[in-house]
Image 1 (cartoon, rainbow over the protein chains, first blue to last red):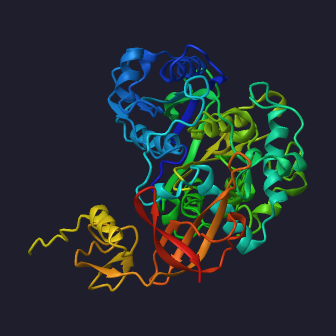
Image 2 (cartoon, rainbow over the protein chains, first blue to last red):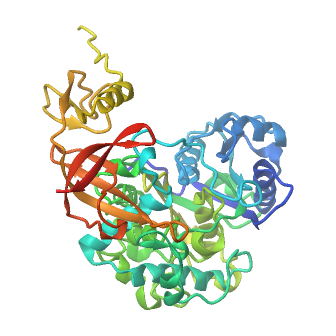
Image 3 (cartoon, one colour):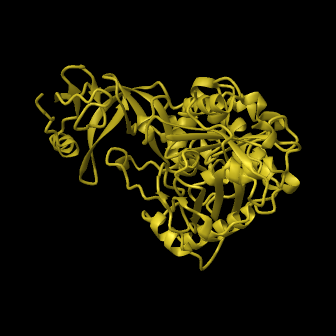
Amino acid sequence: MNGFPRGKTAITGAATFGIGRNLGLSSMDIAVNASIRALRDAGITPGDVDALFICLPDNFLSGLTFAEYLGIQPKITENNRTGGSAFLTHLQSACLALDAGLCDVALIAYGSNQLSGAGKLVTPSGADPYEGPYRPRLPVSAYALAAARHMHEYGTTPEQLAEVAVSARQWANLNPDAHMQGDLTVDDVLQARRVSTPLGVRDCCLVTDGGAAIVVTRADRAKDHASKPAYVLGAAAATFHHNISQMPDLTITAASESGPQAFAQAGVGPKDIDVVELYDAFTINPVLFMEDLGFCAKGEGGAFFSNGHTAPGGAQPVNTNGGGLSCVHPGMYGLFTLVEAVQQITGVAGARQVEGAKLALAHGSGGYLSSQVTAILGAGETV
Amino acid sequence: MTEELSGIRPEQEYRAHLAEGRFMLLRSRSSGRCMFYPRVAEPVTGNTDLEWVAALGRGTVYSTTAIGQRPPTPSYNVALIDLEEGPRMMSRVEGLAAEDVLIGMAVQARVADEDGTPIVVFDPA
């Protein structure tokens, strides 16, 4: 028994809204627009929702505000904040609650107007008293320290990190919703201004607005919903630390625990996965995650992204929407990994569709490589 | 069972020591381990038999980054330092260009004044 109700729940609606800039909309308005789209995709209305999972950048009681806004009277209101991974944590909890019969229809929602509102990352965490005096440029510097250590231990190169950004851009060029499009070369990434060495500005995610939402139900009800279900085969979480100075080993994230657990739940392995959607806040993230999730050996993550291996037409498609690096990054990107995974395995991804994608891995990261949550989704025939 | 909590006021006492020029670490008497940052109980064990001990001040650069600023202002260093006692802390290495700080470099702690606040920084050993 691995503790997860494999295939017993499914995502029946998934949508994004407002990728880019949305003058005049609050983060809540953006989350609601995304939710209305996701609910319509599922063929239901807000009145059908009885469990609400939400995390907004600027509202600590957003579970209450959101429910009031849409006239939902939830049996479960979850406002868990594990950073950008929160929404995958929400999915794990939603699946367990649905399977236990505590609720019937769960809505997971997110929205942020950080570009049109603040113009920079909005974070509710204040400066740490033991790190703040040294003025790390957070979050970038935390990831820069991890990248520097990975380079030191494994010989990972700036060129390999640049390949991560180039691969993301090539996918973004196939996605009409992506915020950043156009040619991007390894040289462009290497020549860009250094923010916190070894990371430059093109190694960093975008600052955009955007919202996302998904609807989750039990598999027996999923058939009544409008769209094709994406079954949840596994969802597992692990956390080692919060601040980067407390991370036990800067080259090994807690994905090394969440990944194998999620694979064991799903009964599949890395070789079975058709599309991988990772939280790529910085170019070092996908390198670490592909290693920790078992797609390659520790230290080989840099080489994994070379020669178009993860780009359109490559053997292992990664971040097929363009990721946080080139598609959308409103502050907490996690839910977008799930939406893209659903769109790929339900075959609605348009020009960026990976042919015959049946199994997807979505991975969220929160804090400073701190909270790691892995979900595995599958089309009907994989259950 | 008696409830014997540590009575430590971590940040306040840490800063009071620094203000007098002392870099101190909290150590659990029973485990013998030092911690950083200071807390009211030892992580994992929950030990509360804590005492302040003078840090040796010797460390090794575990990782490092140079943070760019608008030219001509030079970039500045932020580093993670592994202390000889075991814990790791964020700090910076002074006395050389931010980009010249290298992983593995031996460093020595010093209490410096940062705009009127005492902080621990490191120099090449």
